[in-house]
Length: 347
Image (tube, rainbow, N blue to C red):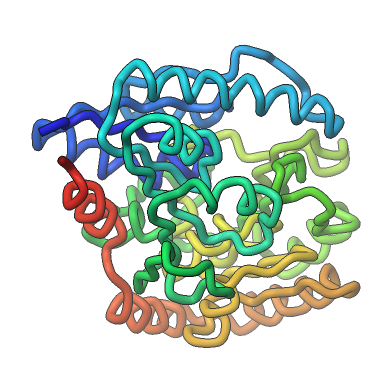
């Protein structure tokens, strides 16, 4: 049996997605080779979790133009394909990982691609034709075809399912808040990923922070980009791997990240997702479970802010915990599913 597996990491969230599977597969005797894009936060997380890895993408390029983004991607693709050639795996897998789908078409291996992002149209067009299996949450909008396998869960339940995650209350000491204090996590994205091109979220950060703080909460900002001076002192400085502990204890999440909105929701923290694009999974989390509130229209900032203030003014923790319990009854542990799919295809 060829027990070599290559796992591609293109984003910090992918580290969380695969970390438990990497551990269990390695303990079962599989040779797991992790290759990460040159993303500092992803690399920090891999190091923090003690996951051996190779960094792909030798060119250090600022993604401030389409040409520079293309050059950076070409470097990443070349390195990823070389890693696949070197290890000769039976399976390669990644979250929307374009290079690994291409590698499987070049070498004798099977590519298992996970995705939950419908609007990543360009990336999907150059990934899906080369993938052997494409795994999506069952709420994914659209039919990919015979390669698509739907499963009843979310990416975030690969690492935040109660079987996999227990919140650490000492994180509150890290941010100098007491258990009875109210606080909100505000997330800003850089909008430089391929699937983010053309999208946008908030318009006036200062107004958002001011309005939230007027309800009596403390605001912690996590941002991929520099912050305006007027709110820079609210930047969150905890270690990246501690963010999920803090999310669990937060009263509310509001931000431009669909992933972090979903992470908050599956932890029982209500989430406001503000973005010009939508996702099937955040739609379901609103329509079926009432844990995410999506705002994508031209008035998304003010509408999202009004919803946030309404939640904070009438906050009742038991409401959100009950909604989370219902979600967990209906969704599976995604890590178990990942492992089952990989091991069932070993030759």
